Image (cartoon, rainbow, N blue to C red; front, side):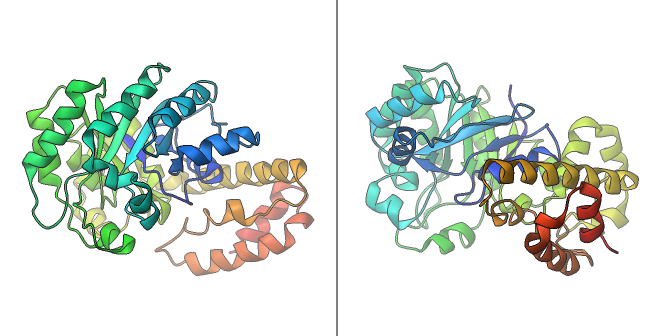
Length: 349
């Protein structure tokens, strides 16, 4: 099943606890694991601590990085049994390790190797395989580079879905620079979809709210948000309402006051009267999820889950108060026997 909206794989962020948290907001999105190098994946499998998908209500993809054809093939055979709905190859990581190892965005310089890795995966699995990459390199933005890159891969593989981070990449710049400084170039991605209409093109990069999502979906098949969701999780309510109630969205989009309020960050869900109910549902499930994790391991670190939750009210007057109460709840969590105890402690205002 193709999902129009997805959450980007964020290394060291979109772990299984983050994905569980997101799944409580909506089942209308696709979630991705953080980037996993093929050698690390195989090492974890040998230690019986491999990554698997525990969620059944949402679509989850695993993102792999590397440049070893045989390792990709071995990983794919294992992934067949782990309940993932997609295997994504990372061609966008700009880290020093990626540079030294010749993977991530640096693998974009070797199209033949990408094709070999892709086809090696498809030999051993029926799970859809996709690519996530940047538009081009250095200062000289070239649409022809993007068109040739995608076209060559498509005609020599079965890849039908390309996730495109609409920024170029500077080889001699830092990770921070490449994540933030190069300007997004949505027009290249729009044009690619127009020139190659038979491909599914998903746009990634700098998308912050539901109104931007709605605009992009006029030109491409799907959109992917990363930091925009991580640091403003309530947008997932907006996405749910957008996917399941387009008529409501159109009415709200006509309200200029609402548009102005949400120009920078979307702080409210469309169904405001249901906000308290939905927030309560999320924390009710989180509470018992944490209890179950503690039952499995009494030394379980609560920060592994709660670090993803602290941004839920970011941008509202509740944000700083909520963070303080959440930090205290970590300290006193063992004293909460029922959800009502936890709820009264967190939402005391």
